[in-house]
Figure (cartoon, rainbow, N blue to C red):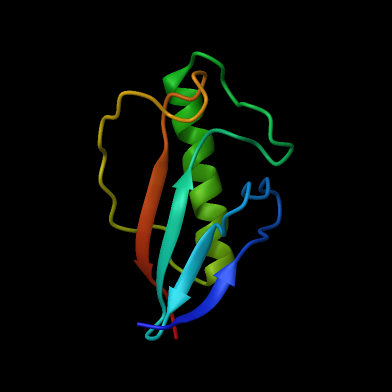
Length: 101
């Protein structure tokens, strides 16, 4: 499936370091990159606090969905991993969403 668009910039969200926040393909299926607890200034939200980090990661996901024109309730999966790219990060959320065409 060919990529139709790359979403690299989202208002109030830190830029991805070398990756797009999401890509859409023919049929407007978007693959959203994993979102972590970085605020719009690339600062860690809630150091050591899983609930605060989860809330920030979900806010980031919702900002991306809004920029894509998608709804607020994508399907999701939670998977435990040994570690994320920064030791301070406790959660990462990604999504695959169907967005309005």
